[in-house]
Image (cartoon, rainbow, N blue to C red):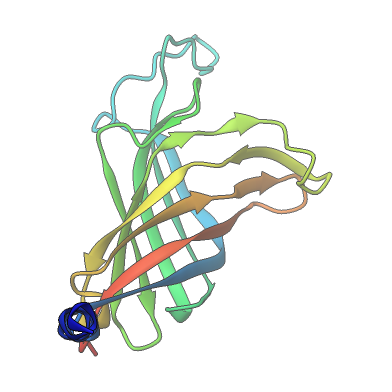
Length: 183
């Protein structure tokens, strides 16, 4: 009985501490398409040597990629996105030394993200036949504004380019930790 009396206050304390937690972690998903606004060599990203016909000859060809679009998400609802980053067109590695990436939800709140990896030629067996390149890389949630201020999280991308259209197709899954009380 004495042990029970000692356990009850401990259990109550643990419950109260967890109930007062200032954050909540939930599953995060986003599906969106992007339009390649720009995909050109840029001195800010690095060199892109070309031959007399203008074809990249390497060993690297750094380009500035700007991708804008829209989609839907568990926490953003309908949103737009803006990605600006450097990528090596020959190896597929991104983002190089530069990345700006964020989503803007229907209330105007911004969720900042980053990701890095490599675009691969071809498709996986799970992709549709028209996929010509893909990337499955980790992403990180890095805060934002409004209800996303102080947000953190992570997950994986499942993205591809297609022979059927000029857009990038994005399917992100992971978790997001939000600060309670942000609106």
